[in-house]
Picture 1 (cartoon, rainbow, N blue to C red):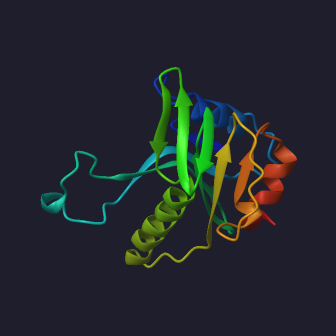
Picture 2 (cartoon, helix red, strand yellow):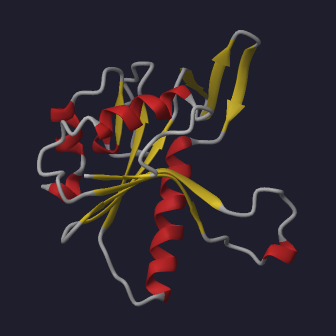
Length: 167
């Protein structure tokens, strides 16, 4: 397996550090030829001159390229994460703060990367996974397939099952 970059920035969020070290531990089966990108910027959806935000590019927490299989986009939300009335929150010592919907973030990254690849005549299967490494979720909703999220302790057998492209 090849990690790009090969080491994680010390300023990265703790949840991403957990997943980076897990993926880099090579506990995933058949992962020898995989390439894993951390904090991959992807192309914008609007022209730079029309963008009102300082954040011009989108970002994928992790993008796994599995040769002859496809891509898996992973969105990581570490810490105490909760959801109430369809709104997502993170909690720190200063209280609860609203955050972006991690499933929408993962899906948006998947589509933006896929659309970019299509402009290069590259057609490749894709899937996404949302990971909550620091808390347990028992989400029973029609909004997302249960195979598209993982919470709590990171188990390599579960990740292999969830990464449907690898099946």
